[in-house]
Image (tube, rainbow, N blue to C red):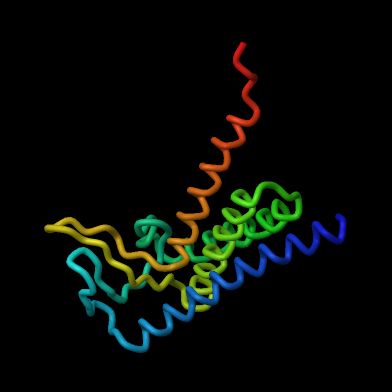
Length: 165
């Protein structure tokens, strides 16, 4: 790996670290000011809450008896190692930013899961009786990162498409 590629990888890892740090700062702020079950309305469709998720997305396997903590921890570690490797291979800015956001979100939730046995969630979207499951900044970064990867894949397809006759 060239010095330039190594420097680029570290820049994207820096973005991932910033995401993880911001995620944990937000979680600490919410935990210092709310008790589980509290709700602080911010907008007609947005509230702050404090919930703990022992499962994965949308509380998948939350009631599985505890083994899921270590399973999701192992998956997050493996995914993080793979993403760091992918960052070293280079790519478009959108692709690398997407990977970095996913890595930062994965690490943010990994630390919670490893240290606490659950992930701290605090953003609640709702409207007229409909409620989306609570989430956090790490989840938002993962979602934005995935959207960047998808958008970049479409951009790549257009660039690779043969010219019209």
